[in-house]
Length: 419
Image (tube, rainbow, N blue to C red; front, side):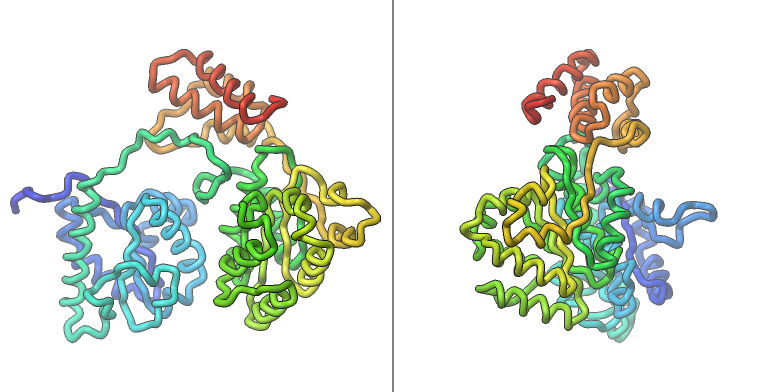
């Protein structure tokens, strides 16, 4: 066979499926064997995990590296909590970030149009389930031809590995970039499982937003009925009660917007009746308290009542909630329902682990670089990220280590006044 038009880079395919569809999985692999032999694609699924290998880590590794992720859709696939809540969620995160292409493969008849991936283009042709074709070989041929075309498109735009993995932003939104905070996540998991509230308190840039975003990602792993609404109170749309209600409604998938607080409470009652567990994450909570004309004492007391009926609220602020109001304020009982979860720098061992963690495509830091980074950062998560960023840049540009640390110092002073 001529090599003309053949992709220059093999596209790794991750197969996400229910084990009850294993026979169909094997037949799909058979039809993709020519593409694999020609090194157009490589294929990975959990049956490739060797004895003694930690399975969750192996799955995460390939789920995070694959360029194509095939969702083998059936009723059993949609019913699998792990397939739906873990693998599919991560797959769609990467798809939305442009890191991978997610393709539904419709194996057996099922109503999948309302799923999160329901708007994605799938195979076979016209999304006709494989098992409904007169000859299933024809369905798998159609799938194989579609996969070849996607692989050629991906090969025409090879991914680069030059992006510095330590670039920082407002909060970590990608699960694979979230590091540490196991103790804090464990406490939040316990609070949510008991339908309790919690206040996360710590200085600026310590990682509060990233922790709340992590709750948004993993809450359904802690409670399969959890539905999370994350709101940043710095968002201009959260400066009015109407805007706040609109964002909450959108996050919880309410078709109609509540116009008043009683309507908000009624919608929560309906969620609870449907077996869903509402979790409300309010970041930068201080900003809400600055808008007392909009967010009146009645608003806070209404939230407290909703929490008593089963909703959990997690706030993030620099100051403990008890210090944000006058003790004589009638809303003070609202704050009494929030146990305090302080957030501080990483422990020394955790900071060291962060620096030695392998980042694909980038060489490990030398012992001298690790010492310089850790000495500079003093366990502060953002300082670790900023220092690592500049050391990577310095190595690529042939600059001295001291130059990198000075640039990190300049950035941290700009980001935090008291650095």
